[in-house]
Amino acid sequence: MKFESICEALLDDAVTRAAEAELRTLATENPEVESRTLVDERGSHWMLIRLDMLKARRDAASGAGTRYMEGLCDVADRYGFTIVLQTATRGDLGGEFKRTTSVARLKQFYSRFGFTSNSGRMDYRPELPGNMHRNPRK
Image (tube, rainbow, N blue to C red; front, top):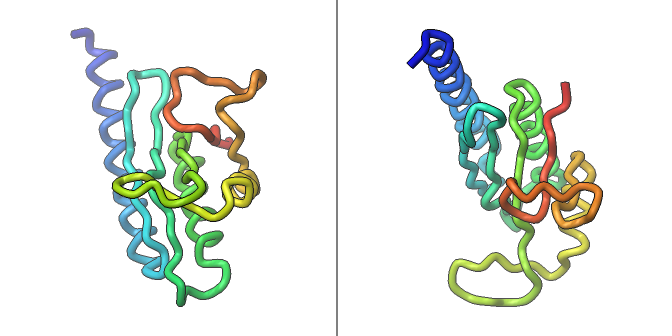
């Protein structure tokens, strides 16, 4: 392995660890929001934060989900990560499947933070998991 490749791998690992630490802090600072994130390295070209779940408790203060998303986007921007997610489906599918009463409302919520659909002709990115993504802002 070339010296440059080793240095790049070490830097990527350090960035991943730093982002993971900030995500843990974000979760601790927002106890009214239940979330599950995963930092996912996909080669040396780009790195992802996968948002697998975001749910504000019923008794949470208004804006709790928004505050969490603002913090998540700040972390992603700081480290140059793309955020990906799969919106919940409508109705009760049971098991591991997420559910919501309004898919359109969820998509509108995430679009406020710069997320775009990953299924449209203009924004389609087949290498990304999920149906919405947000590229880092510089």
